[in-house]
Length: 110
Image (spheres, one colour):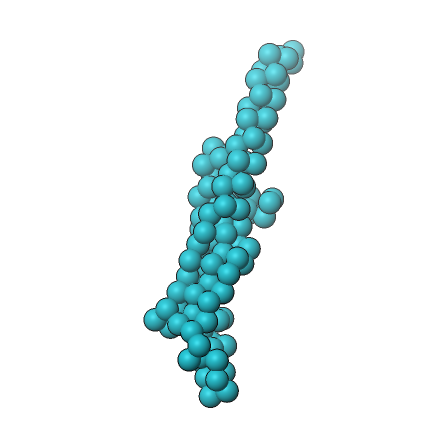
């Protein structure tokens, strides 16, 4: 026979996990990840959700001769910021979800 006591406990656990996930999402939104490339000539700031917050470009790169260098540095910075934000997101969501944190694709639920 089905035990309703276990169902109630499971529902409480799911509610707690959902609250933890929302808290983790808010923490990710407020966390700054700073990536510098080219010896600090290009800096990108993203939050833990991977959303861009700011870009800094050294004035010496803002010339026609440096266009390709700037493009390469921006691509490198964006890719690194994306990678770091995914790592941070995975860690936070794993902590928030507990045992379910190892599920593939969990970070895409946001």
